[in-house]
Amino acid sequence: MILSNGVDCSKIDYTVLSAAIISTQTSSDSIRLFIKCLSFWDEKKTMEVLAELPEPYCEIALYGKRPKLDNNKTNLEFVRLLKDNDFISSIKEEKDLIKVNTFRNSDHSEG
Image 1 (tube, rainbow, N blue to C red):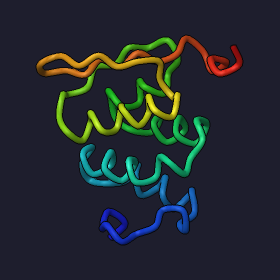
Image 2 (cartoon, rainbow, N blue to C red):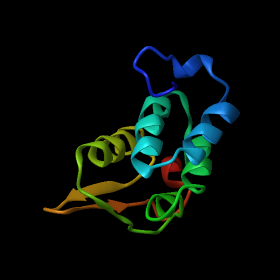
Image 3 (cartoon, rainbow, N blue to C red):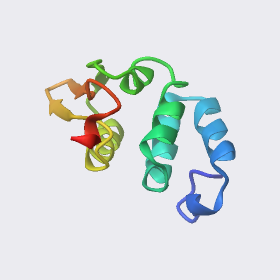
Image 4 (cartoon, one colour):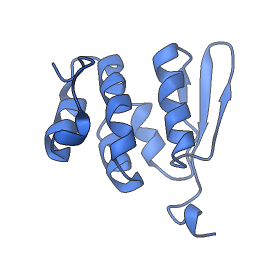
């Protein structure tokens, strides 16, 4: 139900949304729901939820890591949003993989 297009994530409590993301049946559904919520969350909330997801997604929450995701439309949209929100350092698209470069530490925005 939360994945439907008409749902406004800004009106749903963070605890409810994070529990829904963590408990969905597939990683694909988790990431699709995450995409809907990302614009309403700061880095701390985003990383808290990411840390609860299965590998390789949980590795994005670990500063200094370079996780590799399957190259598909959903993952690409997700990592681009993370990059646009300055939650990760960079991404590199390859044929079958997306390489995610996380920041070295949580103080990356302070200069």
